[in-house]
Length: 238
Image (cartoon, rainbow, N blue to C red; front, side):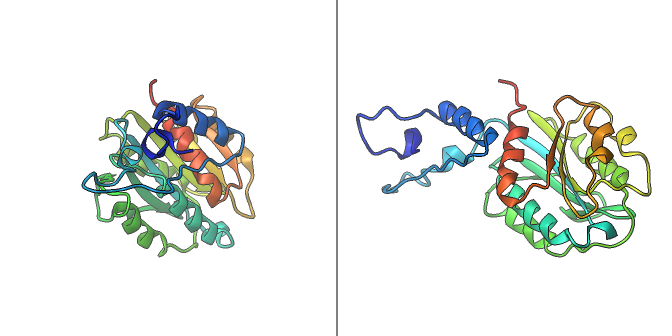
């Protein structure tokens, strides 16, 4: 589909941006991909014709929490691939942070002792910077999901976007630290991508039950990350 910006047939009635949004969401819910294409476009002095598709008046803030514990050693490469695929879905004005947890939780993007959430100013800048840090993670140690949630909530508490969400990539086998459901609370939905050789969905049930908007995705891969991202954006007030 070309939408209002890419169709070059003068008399064609193309999908509006809102119609495209609804159609793409419907397609993704049924496991179908939608491609927005342009065969020809003259830039002249108009700038990037995709800009209105990349920008949005709505902002989304999320924290990705990556399980880097010893039980994930066989799945850590998939965690890296999935995480990079997810952040490539970000749009200008979205905000994000990424932490990695084993026995404790630490920020990998942005870095520093008390980092602030990063606002995307260019889809080829901040996400690319984050990818370099994602490549550095490795799996070892215990599994402290509660610490990762505490860290994520602290970052989101300072923000007032249209949508806030936590995104967890883990097998769920918590074996140290506070109980994840106790730390999580009911205010912020959590979107869980379960993966790894020791994955058991029941580990996540208490967290998922706290907020009706929370969702679980079983053994999702990079090609599925857009669905999770769009599910989060769909939480925005209509």
